[in-house]
Length: 432
Image 1 (cartoon, helix red, strand yellow):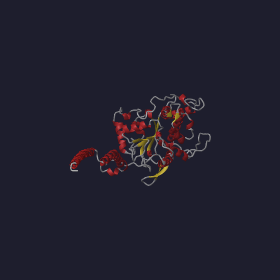
Image 2 (image 1 turned 90 degrees about the vertical axis):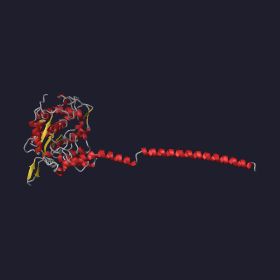
Image 3 (image 1 turned 120 degrees about the vertical axis):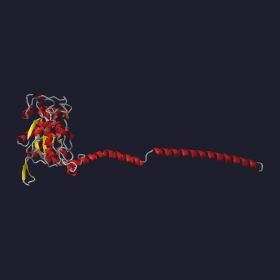
């Protein structure tokens, strides 16, 4: 035992020292790894932005996007709806123009007659507040007037009410005015340049998609506007006396002008814009919906594209010409031969009784003081919505039945006769 005891203790001591050394090395390794992980965590923590930074960035981005929008809306609210709130800063600021207040000018003309070009020229060359397909003055600077095809609905008789109309189909049933209104308002057709908001700021939000609210607003407005220019009304004015107005429309205009373009050129542009697949192609559904609703005496769905465009041009212009003959539309001008100053004069902007005298002064200054070479005194050049850039060129023979996809009997000349008669009535040469 004595001999083996010390040896066993020495071996145990060696094991103990070896164990301690291993433990020490392990501890050092763990400690080193721990310090390394700690440094890495600190480094990561130092480079990674805190969570609140992401929120701040989101707030900044939102503010950058929404702030200009909010400021612009505030600007429109003050200058268009409540200018009296800032009149101490701008003593000559223009008063608010509400939906029932008079504006100087309404120009009506068919689609593709150059209405957008005229609106731009009156605005840019004469400094007038003119809207294209827009008469809503609480959010838009259109207080001097409007150029619009759809406002011509004022002078189109209401089917089944102002005139007895039957559908041009096999049944030949009488037309219901309300059914035509619902057809116009069932779905939004943005290609036609019509939206209820172009008339007034109603109960629906522009952020809403087309649904029950806008559909109801549309039906209310169309029922009010359709044919309202053919009906007179009595208004009470400041003297509390009844005065007869020449129309029954919600928004009055001092002057109404009929803008015309050579019918054959107008049909060409309509074909380029609304014919799917070219001259012999299908008519875009949006034009069919509006044409069938406004002029149900025709079945536009059975027509070739040229015929649909042609009968629309004939019926629309004939309705406005009829209103002019009754004294409900003041004058007519050919867009090819008119200057902005000539239009402004016909619109009454130079008259002493114009609606807003500062606009009168501005027009007189531009048209009378500047050189006759100024853009305001020059014929207008087409720069807006040039759909037909040499794509379609029509001749009188193209309006005959049996041509260009027509289902009519070959040689049928009904449309050709109508367009030639309209061409002469509008002051153009029908032989060209």
